[in-house]
Image (cartoon, rainbow, N blue to C red):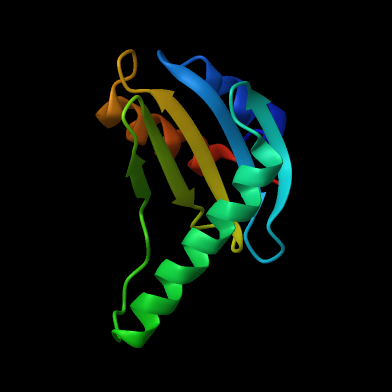
Length: 119
């Protein structure tokens, strides 16, 4: 079990980690953030819209599934968004340098910290 700061510290130990955040997607509010190079308040609000749009699209398609994660690849970064399963309304946001980070490992680490996160 870990709180937000412990969760973020664990994520930031990952090779290539640039920034990490816990976000409430009902309000778009940043609950905690770590790292640099990304305006996390702005990213929280913008990525809230990404999560909402994907959930709305899934609903319109009649999909009976949940989102494991959303991956956005940029020329030099990976942006991972992982809605939490046990803490409804929250998502983890993780930014990695694509030259230094390992995407598969980052996804596993996100899953692990999500399982331990408590608010």
